[in-house]
Every structure is written in structure tokens, then in C-alpha cells.
Length: 402
Ligand SMILES: *Cc1c(COP(=O)(O)O)cnc(C)c1O
Ligand SMILES: [Zn+2]
Image 1 (cartoon, rainbow, N blue to C red):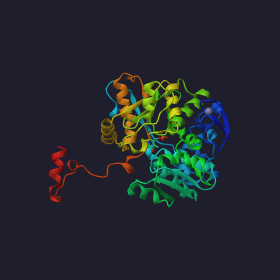
Image 2: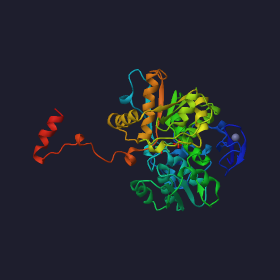
Image 3: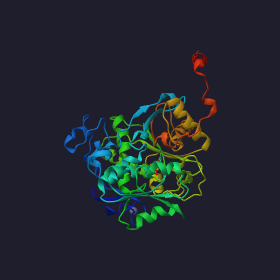
Image 4: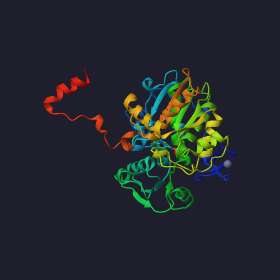
């Protein structure tokens, strides 16, 4: 599994390249045709020889379609996240909403899938251009694997985020100047550091496993749609790749439609979709609470757009107001704490149900990409807490629970 291929023009390239000569991103040329679902008992626990014993399944269940082998240690724990139906947040006459909770990955986001596969495949120092979930994931996985990690963060990254990353002791650089340009710089320059950026082929390979897990949970049926937030387009690419492979393997009765959600304040892919274009143009994004998906010039934007189009899905922009309301709803009504960047996805389900695109006969799997316990609220709304003397506790409780 060494060859890379371009989704757009079909050209192949040797592993190590990141972009096709045509400018589009590459992914691994995996032959999924021979794949079948592993036995119920399959996966890591059988591999006692590898020293891998997990109390749950992980993405390594799909080792046969991954460009890396089952690792030992921390990387063995990525993936295998819960999927459950959440009737308490389903809109009336709307679709069944099934939540895929990626916040339960080892560092609290789906980025661990790509990092685990990337670090498993590569030797030597690794790096990333990120100040969020990806930086934390690379720093933690590098620490566990005894690797040097180079993390390049933007100048304005708040200390609270830096501290979270710094605890894993990477080489952390706060970068002055145009941070957005750094992504391409890091890909091009040979620093002896393998950069696992958001749409690196190894990362996309790891991240495709989220869709393998969703589809296996529905097998022999399939969800009608898979909906996820999109920023660089790396995860959307992985989901599309998985569906293509599973379709080639004859494991999907019908291919789920891929829907992508963006924050309206920074929505280059949604704009291209509405224009009917196949090419995403950079936008002037505005600040949004959806910090993890605030990408005005997505490197895999065209591929993400192609994923939505090829599967008859779509791309939706979500207002700031409805994203924040949805973040609250997920926590208060479904028990799941997420970042606003994830809540755009269930907010988009609501919009698509209102416009009639989803109906009660549909089952939609929504990828909640990261935990809210990292970037969630840091202040308490005074009205949500009562001050009470010890002796008054029984009366105070009786007042709220009559
Ligand atoms: C990185 C990230 C995304 C966006 O993923 P892309 O692969 O860049 O499109 C969405 N949600 C969260 C929580 C993330 O960390
Ligand atoms: Zn190409």
C-alpha cells in the first residue's frame, strides 16, 4: 500500500508526495475490493502477540485497509468510538439522529485516528501546523512513541491552549507572520520532519476509519446520510474514501449521502456549493466560535465539495446563533459536551429537516468531531448555580425537585 492516487485526474504518485501534479491532494490507492467486515471478535484483542490488549475495539480493526500495522501503546487506542441514536434532540418529523462521539478518542478528537496511523507509518520526528486538536493529538502521540514533535502555532494562540499542548513536551513554536501560508511551506521544505497536516494522505487514511465504523454499525443496512463539520476537508475526504472502498467491496446497499457543515462566518466550501462551482475560492472569513473549522482557504476544499456532490449530499452554512444554541442543546438534552465546531453538524440536520431534505424515514449519522471538555465554556452563567447554606440544602432541593 505505497501508491498514492489523485481523486480528480487519476494520476498516481509515490508515497511521500502530498499533491498531484494537477494541484489536487492525493490519497492512498487502497484496494478495498477484497475487504469484508472483520469477525465480531476481530480486532486488537486477538493480537496478544503484538502486546496489544484493549478493553475495547479500535480503528486497527481495519488494519487490512490501512497503510500502517497495529502499533503498541497509545496509538493502539485511537478510534472505536461510540455511536448511538439520540431521540432527545431529533426534530419533530425529522430524521433519526445517530451521534458518533469522536470526543472519546484518547486526546478528545477524531484527529487521533490520522495521527495514530501517521506515526505508525513514519519514522523520526513528526510535526504539524495547528494550534488546536491536531497539535494536541500529534504532541501526545509523539510523546507516547518517544518521537520528537515540532508544533507550529499561530502567534495569537491563547495560553490556555498552549498549556494543554505543552504538557506533552513537544518543540513548540509560536509563529509571527502569515500563519496561513505556513501549511504549504511545511509541506514543501525538507526539514527532516514529517508534517502530518490536516489533509496529509496518512491522516486521511486514518480518518477514513470513522466511516468504516459507522457503516459497520449499520451493516447490512447503511445510514442514509453522514453529516460532519468541515474545515480543511481532510476528514470529509476520509469519509468519502471509506464509502468508495466499502461500495467497491459490495458492503453498502446504497451509498450514504455526505453532507458537510460550515460556520456561516467562514464557509468557502458551502459558497462554492451554492454557486454550483466545482472549485472552492478562498474567502475573507470572520471570527467565529467554531474555532476548529475556521479555514478560509481549505487545502482539500475541492475534494470535500466533490465528496458532497458525488454522493448527492450537500454543504450547509450554519449561523452563529444556531450553532451556539445547538452546542447548549447537545449538552443539556443529549448529555454530550462538544465544541461549537461540532454543533454546526446537528444544527445542519435541523436546517435540512426544515427544508424537507431529511424526513422521518432517514437515518443520519452525525460525526461530533471533538470533545467540549477542552474548549467548552470556561465561565458559569450565574443563573445556573444557586448559593445555599448547608442547613438550607433540603429546602432548596425540594424547591427545584417538588
Ligand atoms: C480539525 C477539526 C475539524 C475539521 O476537520 P478537517 O479535516 O480539517 O476538515 C472539525 N472539528 C474538529 C473538532 C476539529 O478538530
Ligand atoms: Zn490530479
